[in-house]
Amino acid sequence: MSRTGDIRSGLHAPEGERGQYRGPKPRKDWAADWVPNNEGTVRSLPIYVGGASLLAVLFNRAVSGIAPVADASSSQSRADLLTLGLAVTNILTGLVWLSIRPKSISVVKPEGVECRRIQSGLPELVVSELLWVWESLSTVTCCRSLVIIYDSICIMQIGVAAKSSAEDGGAVAVNPVKLMQGTLYQGIKKSKAQNYLANLSLYPGRSELPFLPANTQAVILQPLGDNGIAVIGGDTIRGFTTSDQTWIAYIGEKLDVTLAKHAGEISVLTQESVQRSNS
Amino acid sequence: MDDSQSNGQQPGQLNLSVLRFTLGIPGFDESYLPRYIGYGFGSLLLLNHFVGSDLSAITPAQLRTEALGLSLAAFSAVLPYLGKFLPIKAACSFSRFHLCCGYLLHLSDMTLQRIFQGTATVNQASLPAGNEQLFIMSEGMPEALREQLAWSTYVLLRNTNTIAALVSVGGELCVRGYWSTPDDISRADLVDWFNKQIQNIGLPDLKDALYFPVNSGNEFQTLLPKGTRSLLILPLLRVSNSSTGKLKLSKGLVLLASSMTYAYSDKDRAWIEAIANQFRG
Image 1 (cartoon, rainbow over the protein chains, first blue to last red):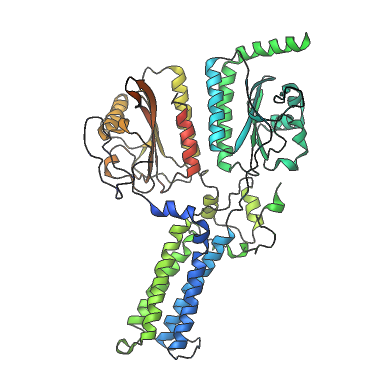
Image 2 (cartoon, rainbow over the protein chains, first blue to last red):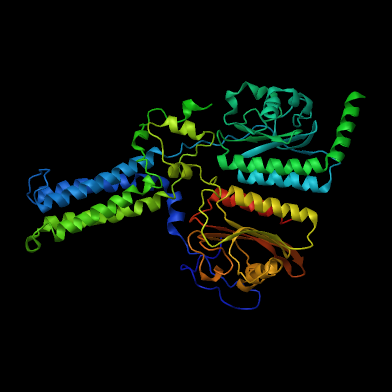
């Protein structure tokens, strides 16, 4: 963020040499910085303030020698009642804030090996877009594994993947044909919509994704048009927010358009891989 | 799917969800209730002091209570402002229906909107009057860049609280959304007009991101649509190796304007940064 030296908006940056930004700088908002960092304190603050005020009112009454009678006959009583009302409002607000505190869910480090497999022979543009998708997802969301399958071949497998039991200890390879015959892919092909498995351990369909680390917590299955699927594995239960889901849907559409445009080159690769598996 | 954990309650934790409520008044945000109560009771305290009591015979005890009451009223008025920055339970995989059934009484629309932070679309950010819908691009752009800019501006307008988006990459401009431009400029000259406005403020020389959550200041008034409250500007820098060392030179910028205050949460800004990364390369 910009320099925080200017604490009032509307101050111009010095008009020094040519090529200097001459607009205003944002005002430093202490509340926006302080509150999220001291969440616990802030949530219980109204309760303490309200509770202390409640006791103070009663103490005040006791010390001044007025009987603690809750009637509105004298101006003192009215003032006390109003203050008590405010104290109670504060206590209730504090309780509401405490009740809507999000449950903190811990991150589970995925067990597996780092892998970065991109189908060779793809055009430069497609590769750079695929890498952009991976960079975005891994930076912004809790995504730790990404597999993209299009036209029955695995275009990209990147991030953390399950370790194979073979001697070389590399990542488990993706079997695109088997995945596309499975229930998970068939389900999203029929619904043409994203499928979000927020807590992967609850789903029996888990066995169709053997290439993901065994302790992957959440998975998003994004269809890429009619021919592809993106499998996005995350390290936190319910770690993908609704915002993330919408962004992923849009990115999926974009990826589909790009891959469809280069479908000719991809189908050549499909034929090559079919020939290799037949021979 | 996850209904058993829907309330997010740890075992042994008090279930306070009964305290959440809505009065069912459309457009009334219940989280502002402490502020209204603070104003109301504070005024009543003052009324009580000047009208309801014998001014010559006010006891110190009453003055103490009133001082305490007025401080509490001021504190209550500030509470909604602080509460805005507290993260609320992220109900990511729940539909509104599940959310409604999970609690004893349903939450008001505004509270639901804040729970789904960052997914409020243009429909929920109100469109201020005096702006026109616009979609212009520089001439002579390579096709690939054209498509990228069109998609990026589309997605930024749909997915964030943005009403107006401007992306400039290497001198090529794409402007989309609701803008207010001078009437005497023809559509063909609009691109030049926008470029000139950007140059006047010195935006191409910006080095760091700027986020104005509340008020963007007077300098931006000609450029931005009417009713802009939040403003986010991300420079697209490219690093060039010169003989003296690495230089950061500006390649362009992403400028987003919204009619809401605090329109861009941290998550929104992270996604916008990711979109901007397409052009940094």
